[in-house]
Image (cartoon, rainbow, N blue to C red):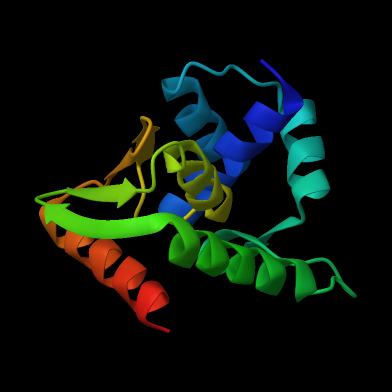
Length: 152
């Protein structure tokens, strides 16, 4: 498994649940099929800027980190959505996004790059993106979030 994949899985876990020890985090990773040594896990947490708080592990932006890249990414997502999206349709825990022909992979890549908590996964065809969330309520929140970006 690559370091980038391992790092992404660690971040997903600490965002999704309260983990208070490296033992808990290692067990959660193992349930995902990743057996990691304590030394590697400690190094990964340091590299990711993850710190332990009263609420569990949290990823903290590095001191002096520039928030501009996050703002630029959000602006880029809004531009891509406004340029290519033609329709949004909620469907239980899914959001179907209709795009210009050939634009679905671009829209899906822009959405995937945002790492929204509401999105469990995405699929892209030629002119359709399917966003998958965990449940119907989350699907509706995701649909509203996308509508707000398109309306701005």
